[in-house]
Length: 180
Image (cartoon, rainbow, N blue to C red; front, side, top):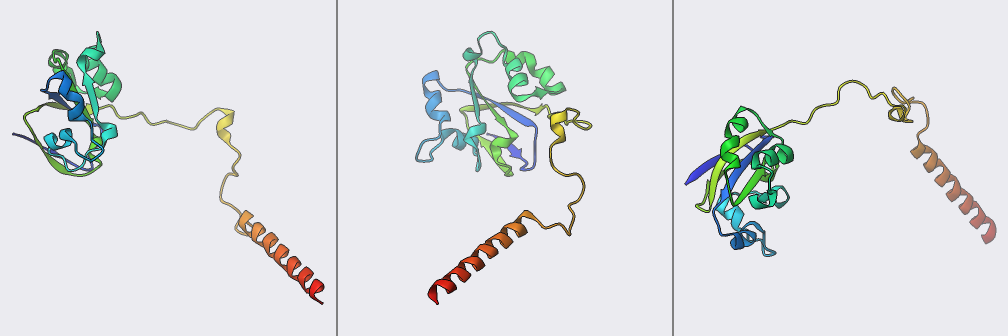
């Protein structure tokens, strides 16, 4: 049995597994039942797995797109290991399962892979580019005052409380006049 350690703080990694099941059994295997039963989670030996991040791909659905292109486009797979694995990735047939780091809910765990799954590899995901510099469009200027607020200026909350207090006092005065 293959064991894989998942570090709960890892990011930007996608793991690829080949699923060795007949096509008609795949849906039942990869879908979490309403009762909570989930054969995929059990076959991975995972303690935590988020269904929304499990990417199940029938390679036939990709038509002429190679699996490596799908992984690069959908998961940002890159790096020298990924480039070296492209020929073997593109030769796969059947169903594969892609599990990005987010699928493990940020929890450290050791996967114990069952026989229905064959671990193909872990690949680095492209990190999103950070914006550099200041925004230059007029709409990015916003309407918020720049700098620190004036500590002596009354806040909107203070004004609202004073108005509410005034209404209550006015109502009490009117009630006293009516009761006399």
